[in-house]
Image 1: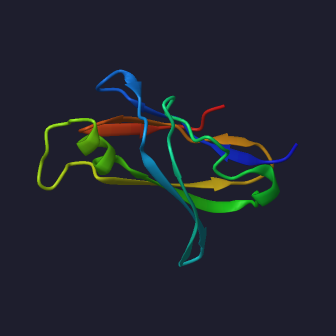
Image 2 (image 1 turned 120 degrees about the vertical axis):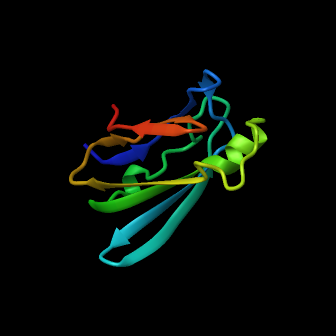
Length: 117
């Protein structure tokens, strides 16, 4: 089985997928942080392609950076200066070939994640 990475972002305050949310993927090697890709969620809150497809999969430490503040602004969430949640980094490890699914449940004042399937 080859490894790959996906996500799904849900806006729990509005009860819908978080469409149009920008996500950056980084690989972490010690203190070095290398940008690999930028994607945007579709109308279902997912990316149109795997974030890290099987042919690019390598074990190691990665970081997904969810640009929640921009999304919340576009979604009409009342503005704050600064926003309580703006950029949400989630750092995680991928230890072997498997489907790694890192969902984000988002509201203006909280978020959660887990290793999904």
